[in-house]
Length: 198
Image (cartoon, rainbow, N blue to C red; front, side, top):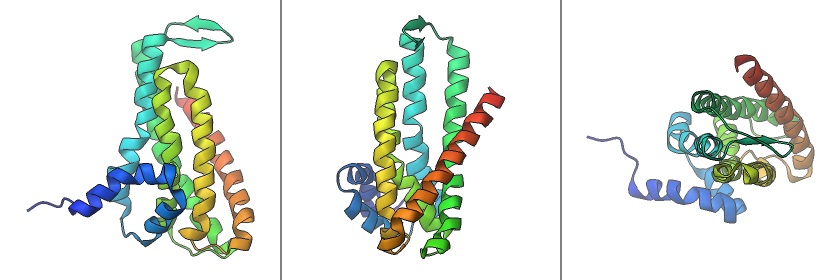
C-alpha cells in the first residue's frame, strides 16, 4: 500500500508553479479550495522549490566566483556550500515565520484566522522568487532576477489576501502593508541570524 497522492493531485502540483507565474489569481482561487496539510506542502512544494536558489547559487559562485564593485573573487567550495545550505534552511524557517505573521495579523483586518491557509498562501506566493533562483547560476544575473521574482511574489501575496484568507477587498491594501512591514523585519532578523552563524 502506498500513500502517493492521486494522479490529478500530482499533476496539479507539477503545474502549480506555472499557474502561480502566469495565472496567479485563478491559481490562488484553486489553492483556497485545496486541503493540503503542512507536511505535504513542505515536502511536495516548499522543499524542492526553495532549493533552486541555493543549489544554483552554489554552482554559480563555485564556477564563476563572486564579485564586489567590479572585483572578481574566486570562491572556496566548502564555505560556499555551507553558506548556501544555511540560506536554504533560513528560507524554510522564513516561510513558516511569515505564515505565522500573516495568520496573526489576519483578524485585525477582517481575514479568516488559520495557520494552514496562511502557510499555503505564503508558500505559493514565494514561487516566483524561488524559480528566479535559477538565474543564480550566473551570479551577475542572480540578484536582479531575484529582485524581480521577489516583487512578483509580493504581488501574488497581495492577490491572495482576499482570495485565500478572505480579507475584505477594502482592507486588503492595509493588511498587505502590515504584512510587508513584518516581512521586512523577518528578513532583517534572518539576515542577522545568518551573519551570526556564518
